[in-house]
Amino acid sequence: MSSLFGSMSIALQSLLTQQGALGVVANNIANANTPGYSREVAVLEEDSPIFLGNVLVGTGVSMAKVESVRDDVLNLRIQQETAEQCSLSSYLDSMNQVEAVFNETQGVGLQSSLSDFFNSFTALAADPNNSSLRQAVITAGQNLADEFNQSSQSLSTIRQGLDQSVVQTVAQINQLSSQIADLDQQIQALASSGQDAGALEDRRDEALQNLSQLVDTSVVTSDDGTLSVTTTNGTLLVQGNQSESLSAVLDAQTGMHGVISQGTDITGAITGGKLKGYIDARDTDIPEMQSGLDKLAASLISSVNEQQNKGTDLTGSGAGGSDFFVPFTPSISGSNTGAAASMTVALTDPNQIAASSDGTEGSGGNATALANLQYQAIVSGETPADYYSNLVFELGNSISNASAQQDAVNLVLQQLNNQQSSISGVSLDEEASNLILYQRAYEASARVMSVVDQLTSDTINMVAGA
Image 1: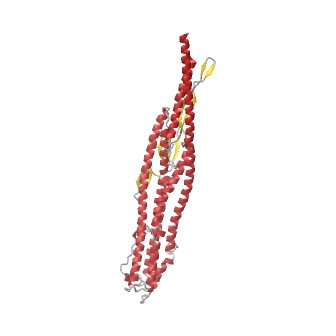
Image 2: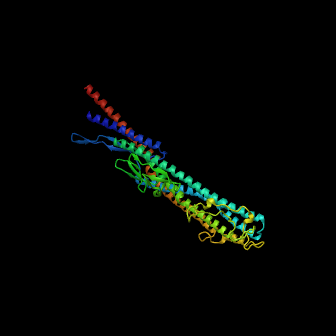
Image 3: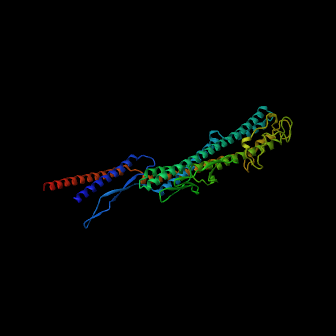
């Protein structure tokens, strides 16, 4: 009798085990299209056998655990490439805004205004007493100054916008770090009680992926399954069930927010994620573009005023007469900061344009000299047009290089995601095969129970009729 009841117990246990395995398959199929889901497998184990007399007899099967299929090393690679991709993406988004300010192909930028300004002097040189041409010179100067003002203001506005993006990104990093720490605590609690934490681990992986989009991360898994998450330069973000918050603190000197961790400024140590792209554009590329613009403006103001003061205007003023532009006075000696933003035409009377070189009637020699400034190396050994063209070229080159890097990173990331999908993704064909496998095992176990039940009934009837 014990052997029949033993067989019944084995069949019952098998029924429960196959039912559990079918539940795992059903869950995989249900989550086939769920972002971040890692497929699960039912890990079946043979129960410990027992001795019946001198014979070692098996006692059936049990489902030891449900295990999520994931490759932690591959996940780390994906997080690293994601950080690089998002860094390039946020950088390109930022610099494309800057490029729009100097989009010469769309008629936006300084090139046209520069040409019009110098050409107005060329026209005046041919007819220096023409009041309309004199007014045209002042108008062209005002248009040029306005372009400098607007370009400088646009760069400042873009930079302020990026600064706010830095502040918002730091807040998002803190939110995700806190979420990962909370999930770590829940995962640890489930693991210590022997329960499956696969669903929570999927949520944690997704949170880590989102975090890597914002900042470069390095992840170490401890023996209890909790994580230590830092930036690649070692700034702690998460340690087990505790998270460390970053702060965005305004620097009074620069007017921009720095990223602070436990009292230390780590702004320059960020190497990936959207935060890196915003910081690079805000603190390096835009200031360089602004500096170049200021240098060009300061050189034009100085050179035009110097040449203007060498000539004679229609009022009879000779050398040392009125400046054409309001002279630029730097706040710091040797600095050009603010020249583009403050550039203004000083002359209001067209008769004050010093077109004559010698004061004689109809002389336009100085107007010609003013026009010829466009061909002279007055800005860092370059002509104004060449200097500006190189400035715009460097901008375009930076964007082009970043775009090429982004394409390369996108390709690598796509390959890694495909590899991850082949490991952790749900294959409906494979799950259909497993469904049939466990279904057949379930039906066979039920058949065993039916047979054992019939045999038990027969045995009882035989004993009762004896």
